[in-house]
Length: 142
Image (cartoon, rainbow, N blue to C red; front, side, top):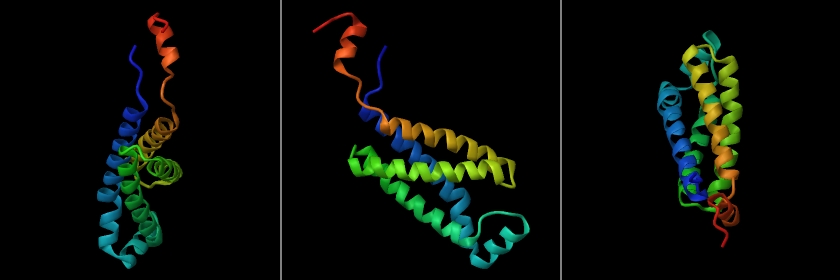
């Protein structure tokens, strides 16, 4: 059985972070930023949702996540650390969305995001498979 190399795992993690971040930016952050502070705060009071400062904070974390995804794709240590930190923040945010979001689609996206960001953290923390253990799996000792 072929094992996933660390560099491939980091590339998969970078793609997951980038795709989820772009979806979050396009669907949630950019429309709220375009609406402005007054409209977002009125909607947050009426229907429920984040206040405007949380929208700005979320947008800043999205930009940071894009930079982190690039660093992780390049297998840079700073990128991997930044992806772990951003993914941990996004896990908290996704858990809150899964529990408290007023719309079902947002709750589903929150659950899926939570699972994927936990997977990203796992991919970033796993180590390269040992060459000695590979030789025992194939039955050839070197």
